[in-house]
Image (tube, rainbow, N blue to C red; front, top):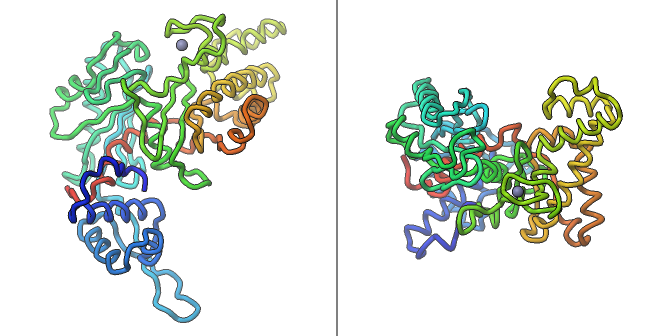
Length: 410
Ligand SMILES: [Zn+2]
């Protein structure tokens, strides 16, 4: 069952065994709701009486509720009652810090975002984070049930110290090089609520396994690749976020595709990021317009959304710019596929709106460059979580803890 690291579970005391089974059942309800006791027993291989005891405890502690009567069997058997996750059990605050805007949201226990607000970023991190703290307090004062907000998850950009909430390279947010987001936010909030932090691409990966609506079964080995101003990735291995020894795993944007290529912000040359970021796509489009003498198209500044809109209106230069970006993305995926061997790669960012151009080109590159054993077994799909999966991931960072330890109660 995902999110449960058996290696860290410690000795299987009677108490912990009971808890592990509770965790198993609660996660099953979350993934497959509405679900009957019989189906839970079948899926978990637990005795019916054990399942009943666990459900009774989960009902008593309001983790789940029971309603809906299924259709009676043709033999006239007893009607099934179904279990659902109780969305009102707990609430989480999610914060997504971005270069322009800082988003703040509250989600229920099932991960549904109930309310969302945004405050403008500020070149002064102290002022920016004080505005975020005011936004959080405002949300907390809305009509949420008292005492049911269990934590705050914060999505940071780039290299981070997830434990302390330090941004190690704040330039991406227009801040100084290192910013102690955690301590500034804790002081500004002065609340008795835990605050958790991680890098945005990693949180987006967490959101995909936690809340993603993919048609195939949920992947245990997944890579989320975010394409925006830069390119970052989150890696899930056996259902667990992978951080790496310095919390720096997933910086695939800085894999060099051409050692003689353009300079990159990391100090290297020809990184995936300099060929496939949104700005790279826009620059390529402008270059195509200049070569083809279509200067009127680039009189005004355009953003990636506008470029995608033009590609949808069959502008050949916009289509070509996106297609070439997809060529580089395809090449960038090769080391990811060979090293991580993921079951699923989820792409995030505006570029996924041009999936009809991007996807076939990525597949073409992979088919030409890697062995069929790898290429035929990896699903490549756009994110199903709208344009801010990292915000959803920030709430998942809080809620996931609850699902790994339901018996702790609140
Ligand atoms: Zn680089």
